[in-house]
Length: 456
Image (cartoon, rainbow, N blue to C red; front, side, top):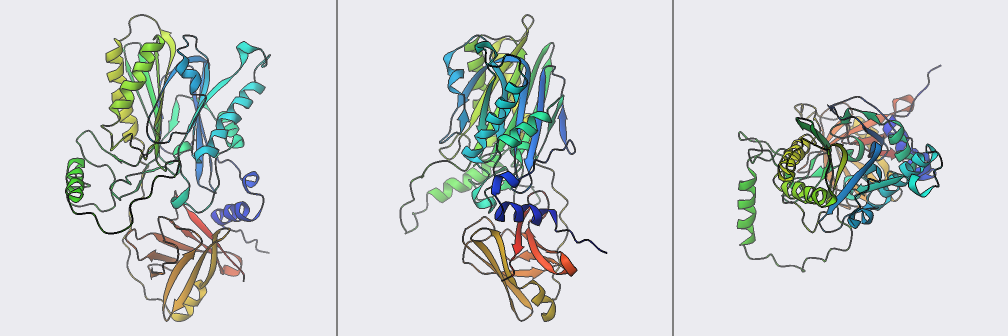
């Protein structure tokens, strides 16, 4: 007797869409893939993800409380417990920091970590034993995925349980699971979680960042790191992009309605944690946060716009009391480390395979025709026209398909098609019982967007 298993992407979507929502999600924890390995005792990092999003969270845990400061800028940041860092306390009291996707909903990751730490603390109700967890979030919902799975308290607990020393996963991991950048130049590209470590003498600096910026990541040679269309010069220079953009600004405005006012939360944010072991008074720690945050405008351009909600935490474990660097030199070291971390955030991409058109028989085309559900109320209709098939989505716009627009699908493999759009996204139809088509996955791989076939 054969047992037929629904593909994991469709199973997770089906459970999330049609059952009770968040409480059906199962955290995914893994130590595989690219990672930074560092030597900084007393700091542990853990990540956990919901593949049904996909989305995730990252937790940085201190074995002993750390002293902290924060620098918040941009149009609409999302943070928790940052007001306490603005009160100039010289006493260390930060036990952990969380970074998460999910916009405001993702702040509950910090709550999950705080409650888990409370359960592990003797006499947890005593005022000096209160566990303080800071948090910041990115927006990874909306157009990049149709579902509303978000990091929550359960995911925060899973990330804390997975925390270990000397390791930070890179790319599409943790809070960077579905991070993107490059929107200002209408060239959105996947980014993710980056980290870097540097040491001079006894002074250590660790930086962890999640880049979800409206701007583009730029290397130390002034070149754009990722782009949609490569030429003989790669992605070209950021200076050339700005020159083109400013020339466009000189053109007469196109007729039409005035631009809409921003309604609220931004869709872009870079959240960063800078940790050193050098003892610093609060004023110097706050200046370190400002200096490093300013420096990040070299690596992400433009940076700190009204469409970003950037937040940077600066912390010290206070282990090096003598023989340290001057504050300005420590700021330079930390700034260079932050640039390293940003450059480490774009995930490794699989080598792109050539796509050749394959003729599709009419009978085969009928296999794929039908209605598919991305999420409740978001329906993709696939129809056949001769030997061609097309797709239209109703219920929500996305970065892949505008609602109501019918798009042709080019056949490139047995169950694989290419959307005939500027993005040329891949669609893979999934087979289940009796090898019949039971759904499809848009962009199969690290950032799958699944849809389940409807029976009616």
